[in-house]
Image (cartoon, rainbow, N blue to C red):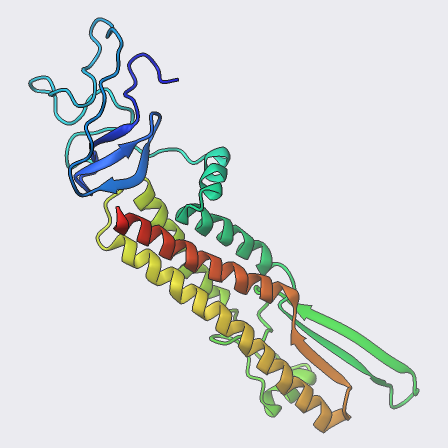
Length: 276
C-alpha cells in the first residue's frame, strides 16, 4: 500500500527529461518511458497533511519546478535520484526477463567462469631413460598469461611450442585485458541509463560494447580449440601420436554462454526502451 502522500502508479513527466513521460510504479521510477500522451492518472483519495505537496498530475505550485512530492524526482532537465539496486529487486526483474537484469546475471556468471579451466593439456608417454610411464595434466584459466589467446596470447606454431617446451617464456598477456573493460563499459553504461543518468548515445554504446564482447569471447573459444589441435599436431611430430592431448575446458564454454547472455540482455534492454 502506498504511503499517505506517495502518488499512485502511473505515467508522469520524466524527471530526467529523456522522454515526455516515465512510469512510476508506486515506489520508484522504472525504465519504461512513453513518447505519446499517457492515459490520465486517477486521483488518489486521501486528505493531504498540512504543508504536504500536491498530488501528481495537479499543477505545481508557483515557484515549485518539476513534480514535487515524488521520491527521486527532480526539476525538468535534472536527472532523477539513483534508485538503489537490491538483490530482491534484481531477482524480480530477472523473473520478468528484464534486459538489464539478464545482463547483470550473465556478467556475474562470466566472471565466475574466468576462474575455471579454459584450456587443458595432457601428456601421456614414457620416460626415455627409465621406461616408466609419464602422465601429466595442466590447465589454465582466463587470467593465465601462458594461454594460447586470440588477441594478446602466445603463438602456437612449432617454434613457439618448442621454445615453451624447453622452458622459455612464450607470452605473458591475457585477453581479459580487453574483454574485461568491454564488459565493464557495457554494464556501466546500461546501469547509468537505468538510473536515469543522461548519456549521449548511451544505449548504442552499451549494445555495441556487449555485442563486441560476446563476439570476441565466442571467437576465443573457437581459437582455443584450434590451438589445441596445433599442440596435438606438434606433439605427434615430436613425440608420436597420442602423447600430447589439448583442448577447450568447460570454463570456456560457460564463459561463452555467459557472454552471449550479456549481449542478448543488452539488445533486449535497448529494444524495450526503444519500443516505449
